[in-house]
Length: 508
Image (cartoon, rainbow, N blue to C red; front, side, top):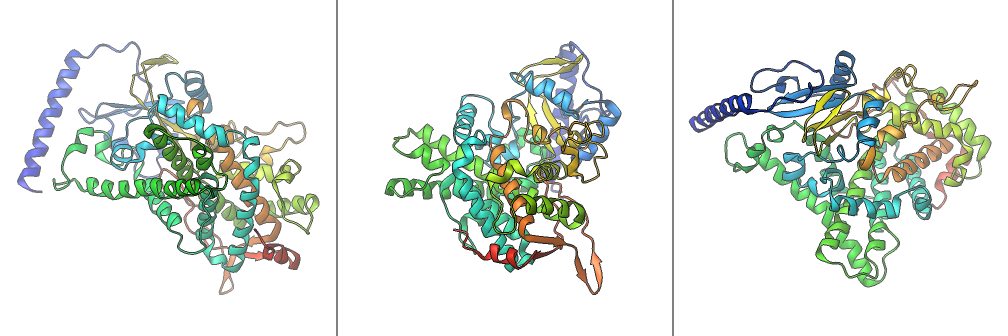
């Protein structure tokens, strides 16, 4: 370490000690105790307790030890973890006026540029305008009916791609998810190979998933570090952020320019952005809101759906009995002469239950961050204004009091049977709470359902056999904000000659 870096570090430590002592002298006494949690150290608090890998598992252990609500303090930042649906509903739904803000995340939000998207917007007028735009187009299942033919067409194209090259499953899942949201958000039809918009989305969302965990970078706890120059020792995060921001800006600008050009030429098909642009002269602020509303939906749907659909193929590889039950239902309701469509959804309860179990079994976003807009006392605990609230979705969907044998993959848990009520629908948890409920939840749900139904109608999915040995995939997930199953091998074949013919039919 250079002499300059050592002196800078010593100066920082002296300043930190001074601030800490002043805080101890002048801080007002709290009106109630903080929630329980791991004991911290002087100055740095619980910095050493921040989990670096699969944080949701650590948070779940805290829940078992300290209760539904736990608390740590990292360099003066209060962090509160919610591990139960009850605490989330009581705080985020019933007290939404307090718990609807988003923390300022210096690395992801400010430096990487993602703070311009809906997921990172602070609660206020611009946030409400973004959500109003999203709700207008995708706010409920009925609003999505106009887009069902596009989703069915893209799902059919997915079948063709996978049948031709099953070893490219993961790439085709990603391509299809991007194709759906690009068509719905911008009216853009992707190219089969090396599509530039799919490529920029993949780069940007990979970076977001890898680097967006709050606390991954020290600048999240010490925001003043964002001001240091890139050449300063230890400022590598600034160079990384610059690269990420360039990709974020391009992901927003490129498809938006495409749809604006299409609208200007009078040839734009129906889409989220074209509906907001047609027959209007936008102010700079309105133009900004449409642009970043669209990319918020694009980015939100292009990666989360990938994880869920890839998990479905993993589950079918591991649980052939579930696959057979699902296929039997499709055969009985739909028959062998056509592909399932959204019109069949109400008649396929087992496929519906399977869709729910995929969302519960693979927690795509295992934890979500909020921030408090004012002080609160909840259940006798003091939650200061500006606290970071972490919603541990993984814990909520693996709670044995709510979901029997949560480690077991069992779609029937969501079917009424022998007078027993179905377990809680995971969609009431995994898409968020309160005023920050995911605006694209109906789109994500529809994309997952049609992919599952069509794939099961025509494919047999099984374990790969290599040198006479059956290969059982490992169930393991990445640790980023959006958690993906790690790559695995599976065998995918047409179920029959009729299935093969259905796949080969024109998907347009």
